Length: 118
Image (cartoon, rainbow, N blue to C red; front, side, top):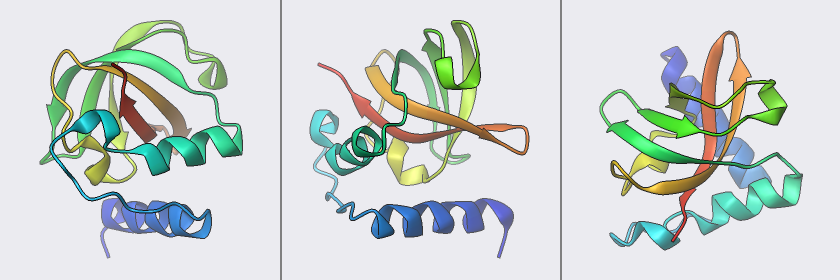
């Protein structure tokens, strides 16, 4: 199994273990990831806000302009994140305001949850 697939599989297993429920894609991305957002809030992971600059569904990556990321000791900037689960990026588009959780593992920055803010 390729590393990126294994990572997505591991993230899915962790979400299932935490009791997250899958929400079918409805085209309305404002309510697209409430289960993932609830999991982040319940676990106490620090959530950040930003703006989507680019979505690359094929590569499973999103470019975000974000404020400071306290958990990563990172100042505000624009950067590319890999989605822990590429399905997290479905429905996102350039210009969307988002709330997300980011982490770093083995030198790669990941978005583990992301939701649009209205």
